[in-house]
Image 1 (spheres, rainbow, N blue to C red):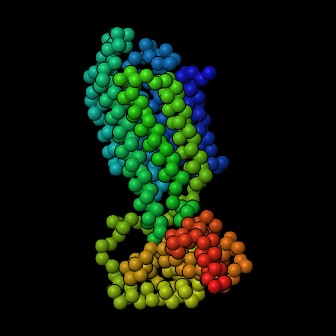
Image 2 (image 1 turned 180 degrees about the vertical axis):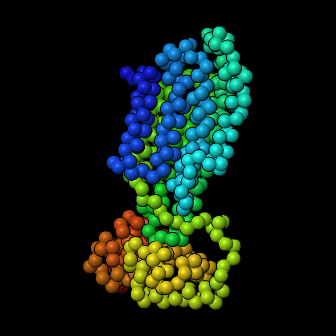
Length: 377
């Protein structure tokens, strides 16, 4: 049977091994490895309080108590910084002013703990431990809840950032399924669920509601370990495939050097060339490549799509692909749907099905059946 001590030991060992493996850059070329490594180190420190208690070292080093609780507050800002690094056009430093200012979330508990605990003498700390003087609502309920809420707040910022990143990608790429970091988003959402469970568990245990507390505690440790494994595996799977994006819109110039007539002219050129030459059949077509083909500035092509045609690059190209797929379905019924998907510029059948349902308001199979029944009639 797994004990709390064995679980915590396994937790620490796995984090340490992952940290060591990440340093083998030639075998595992991971982007933003410094930030990811810092997350692993912080996860080890977050369990410090528990490890001191189960190992019996707390009475030897009572001054180390609460360090894990404070470092837990840094997880949210660090994970958020990692997401920013994964979704930014420029290289993001692990230590800069914008990142370090988020450490202010640790200020309230530190201001409380310095005079309350860390500046106290060892005999006083031992007396508090042995007498149960630390078991106050502030220590056992409010501060843990504060830590959970801080992490949930930053996870919310992470998910919002990834959603915005997915929208930005559609202005520059015609195929975003391998670039939108959907796996990372799902992992962070799982962590948010874990933290919500921990928050509820904190209040339930305080009010002595009759549940299997040790079991839930073990499950939470295992769940955090699974999150760490998933986070590292996602980073390793992504490798160093950095997605080159232009600077964010708020950093761009507020005025455009192009007149409305020039933008309108570019929009007409896009419609003519894309349809006549069937440029949308290129599965790897990007806005940058289209601009080179049209011999137009990339910014001007983007403005023509967004302002004149009222579509993102992703929607315009994939809408044209679906129109082409409809033609193939009606004119070449002998083709299977996978062939149609590939001949229409899609990289996979699942992406084709999703796009078809979005732009045609039905599935490819239903569209084929409807067309077949129409021909029979």
